[in-house]
Image (cartoon, rainbow, N blue to C red; front, side):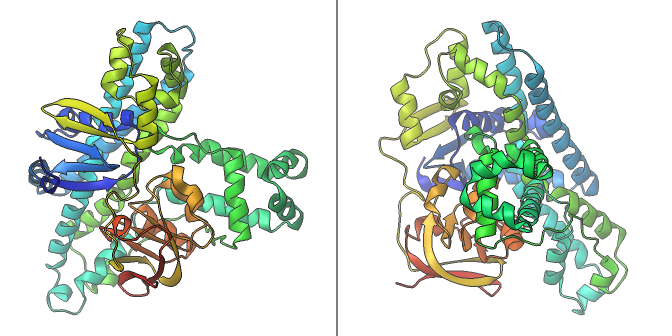
Length: 495
């Protein structure tokens, strides 16, 4: 099929193992995971983009819409089901973290891999479904809004209501992690001696904490244990370390970026005040559903990261039994690992190295997975068609001029300097060290409650989301004016 026959879902650097779980899950697990009679037949991961055939996308939208019209009962059931499947995956990771794998036989390792793979694939349909379903839920809210007299006669504008309702969503662990990091930075900055020590050397600062500030050390260790897994997107990175957390805090204090990290609380929306009339029971129920549904955008990804980090002792043993490191193993697809456990050779080191250096394409066609490494290194954004400007939705207000840095993954974060404007397809928690250095964010993807939108508002830096084409329109190191002062945000080349 030609490129125009596909819909780009999201651009993100992933490991082949995680991509293969996604593709297999989309192909085989919608019925089991969500009780929806649907199966993706044509999907490809190419140039770090997830792409679904337009035929499959239309069929998926139809299958979801048919279920979503059932009303509040469907939404509540869907949310509960997503958490049930996610908790099952995390419970397997937890079990794996407690087991001794040092003497595990090949048969035991195969059984463990099958168990972890099936639970992971059973969770992947929620990756695709949540975004489509959110738009359907929002449409149902708009339809219910129109039934209220103050909306119908124009006393209250419907378009002003939905953002207020979205702001009442339950918190996410990504936001909690950022706020907790800023609390640490704020408290360290209040101690001139600690601040001076941290500014000189992160290792020296950490080594001094047991005798100088054991309370801060305890909080750092708790932060790492509680949130460290958030930065392991696509299985590709190690959990957050004390050194890395120290560097983030060092940057926040040096750039004076410490946000007012208030205690997290879910906003209570007064519907009667917003509508200027008594809300209908149906509308009130849908608003409650929305507040619990929006965090699924994060949860559907986060459970994969948490489970994989918990299962790392198993993955390390599995890799060792196959003569690989864990970092090499995740650059194999599921089928190759399973064949290796049955005695077949894994891809040669040269091929794995090529996938790591140049990236790769994974294709699902006729229920079969095929992987091929690229001949040349991946260029961020794919084919670059340089333009002078892009437009999107303002997620955080402000205006800044600066040099842009185009990146596709956290492994490129070193390109982002203090004051750079970060341009990427979408941000996730593993981008935080870059985000806390940059002066603004521009993304291809995302809605008003995506990670970039939430974090940019927390840090009070301008952010434009949903441009669609920033990564292949704006060239790396281009000087631009990022104007996010209106509802529509623009990024314009200045020279």
